[in-house]
Structure formats: structure tokens, C-alpha cells
Image 1: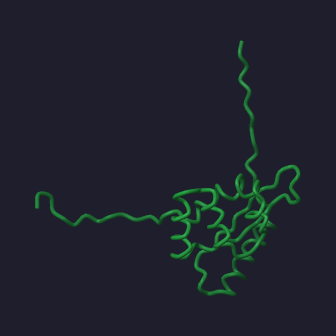
Image 2 (image 1 turned 30 degrees about the vertical axis):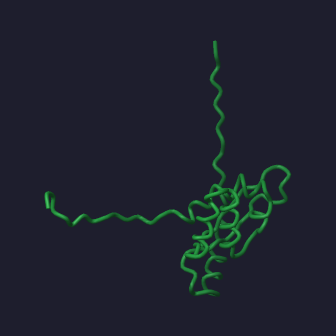
Image 3 (image 1 turned 90 degrees about the horizontal axis):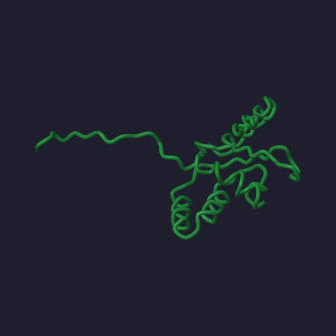
Length: 131
């Protein structure tokens, strides 16, 4: 008889203290540069062998030029495009998230798409059917 084995993984969470630190850093970054509208703080949890339990990076929403550069690079190599995007949008925090291959590829890269998600929107069709 085949036995079903289930693994229950704990969803990683940040502490209230770390959340408070992140909010304070975001506020500080916005206060220092009033043009910053959107800041994305990303937390990547360390594994065995990493020097930290959590790595935190603060990233700005890409500008038109940065996004165009990302799109051009993504035509040939998506990983290089994502790393370029991360470097160009990095504001503060643990730069190991970008420079360490493991932390970038298997931690940060999967989160970066949240920075470039499209806003909610819809097309309003004002044409009359049959005309």
C-alpha cells in the first residue's frame, strides 16, 4: 500500500520589528527624494550557509528609460534583463540580493515581476454595434 507523505512548510514571515524598520526606511527614502512615488521593499530569506536570515532590498518603480532597457535585454536573455532591472532600480539595502547569484536567481528574481505588473484598467467601448 502506497503511503501519502505530506510536507507542511511554514510560510516565512517577517517580525514586527523588521516590518517597522522597513516602513521607516521607505518613509526616509521618500522624504529624501519626493519624486519617488513607488518603493518596493523585497525580503528574501536566507538559507543554510547564508550570512543573514533575511535580506532586504528597496527598489524604485522603473522609469521609462529603465523599462525600455529591460524590454530590449529581455529579447535575448531574461535573467540578464532582470538583473539589469534590479541594478537600475536598486535604492538601498542588501546589495547581495543583486550580486549573489543564488540570492538573485532563486530569491529576488521571482519577486521583481511585482515591480512591473500592469495597473488595473479597461477599455471602454463607446461604439454602437452595427455601425
